[in-house]
Image 1 (spheres, helix red, strand yellow):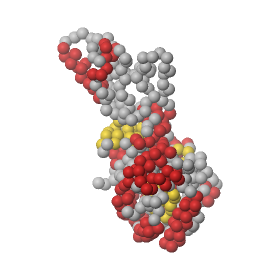
Image 2 (cartoon, rainbow, N blue to C red):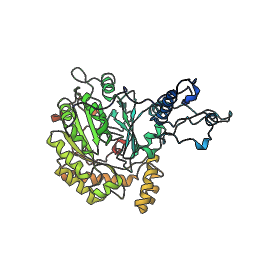
Image 3 (cartoon, rainbow, N blue to C red):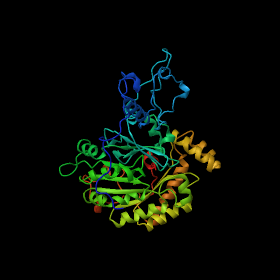
Image 4 (cartoon, rainbow, N blue to C red):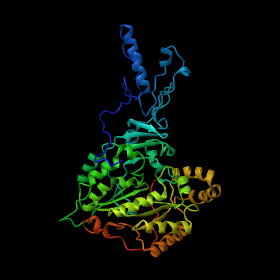
Length: 456
């Protein structure tokens, strides 16, 4: 299917309301229909009222409908005989449960920030055992203040990632929305109005570049936590809306990190961006073995498809390379596997080859250990020993792996990174794509940081 010329991402208009036929009170509970004065009239009016009540009960919502304690008694039914809550993301850990009968219990805290926005997100669709929501956000560009990161700004078109990588460090971000980390690949939030919001952010947040400005351009990294080309992109087109805005600007410094071959869908926009800004595409490939890849990255494209995407990007004149990130101890760190990846990178005409050892947040460790206990029980004990005390693998191991990857770069004449590692190393004005210079081949250790452990 040809690539769309414009984004198909829906806007706020025309979306289903949280509840149909009823309104929430100040406590957040939906008032039952019998809280309003009853109308007298013909039997047909009662039938219409019944249909409206049924529509109300099945309306998509992030919270099950909460009825007052006396609702069952007023309708002559017991609580046990009440129908179950309507379908929806029941995994959301709402802080607004049903009112307690005891006056001594303090009321729960209100949801705030991103959790409140997530709670107001309408359910767009459900398939493949995954629910998709439309997230009303206030901004697309997010500032990165860490001095360890080689970028100043990040963009993640989605919250949650359907690829479901067992090692994904970004699972903890679902906790900000009062969702369990295990829901990371089951509840996907597509950011609404991404194009207009990014246009505003680029105009107001990014440091100006060009003639008269001596400061180097601030780097924008896309896909640092969730994959911008995960399956949801086919439905919502948030990434394409973002690229359409970036294509109207010049002098930007940009990178995209993905595990998906879907990136080639947007070659037309990538070419336009590369003519006016510096652009690099990092394709994350952790293993050359398709069976292992299917186990640790259940819904991501096969490794050969990712290498084919690199080849197409290079044929189109787009700078692209391989991120062997993360390298999983005992699973993907074999010398033979890393050598095979380097060989395949050369065959695909990749320009750089970077690797970083796995690091784990606690929420990610919990999910990964479940997988290891089932599939690789002998490794599970080692992971508990290493990662229960620290988010990082031991320094000796990291140095060994870094040296191993460095030797492969030198052997196959591959670069280290597509862009400079600090603002001071970047030119004052971002160069167009064809003038983008790769960092010199380096065998220095890759920083073990959050950005190197890209989320699916």
